[in-house]
View 1 (spheres, rainbow, N blue to C red):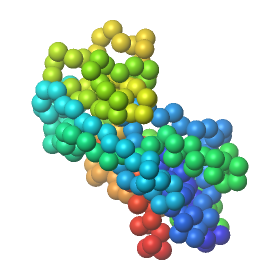
View 2 (view 1 turned 120 degrees about the horizontal axis):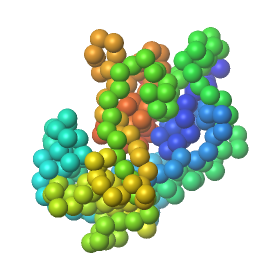
View 3 (view 1 turned 60 degrees about the vertical axis):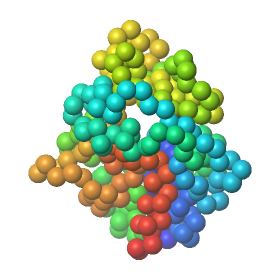
View 4 (view 1 turned 45 degrees about the vertical axis):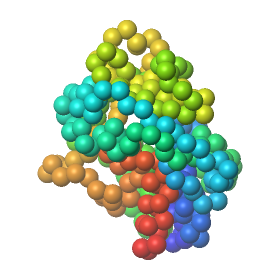
Length: 264
């Protein structure tokens, strides 16, 4: 079983990890929970870099970032002073156009590729880890939300409200608008390949009927207050929810899996 890699989770990060494992000559065994289904993707998501064998050059497009107000206003609106402006995506992504690849299309391809043969209806728990280790699995890589996998850790997050059916007026095709001004209740709105979204802080009023509540991970810490790293308790942690860390991109899972497996 040494040539098998266990992938926990069948969302975009999990299937990108599985794709990387397969292209490194490993067999990915994907544990998708009791009832594996495709993850729902919210707006403002795309691949920032091409993925070998999945994206085509002609699929590349540009996403334009437009900013209103200030980085400080944005950070205070969404994080209420708990996160410094320089560590937000407002600062990470400069205003203007950025190269992009379609995440929804790539995720659909990955699902079609893996769903019939490599995704298993198995709920992974940490109690199963010794069994997989005894069987000789080369690695266990998890993109499962860390607060479900390792509930004994201390987690911080920010609750936001997301409307997945609309975008704000003035948001053009393939644009993401950031709102660090107080006269707009939303903190971000996007329209990427026709998939629209408005994101509000949980303190916004009058938007609850159109929105769903989502927890945005900030950090996970152990009993000693130390930040949880990329590998913890014998499991490699990938993806924003799998790491429970802000600022993680979905396509990081592909590159990081390649790096993990190159070190075996």
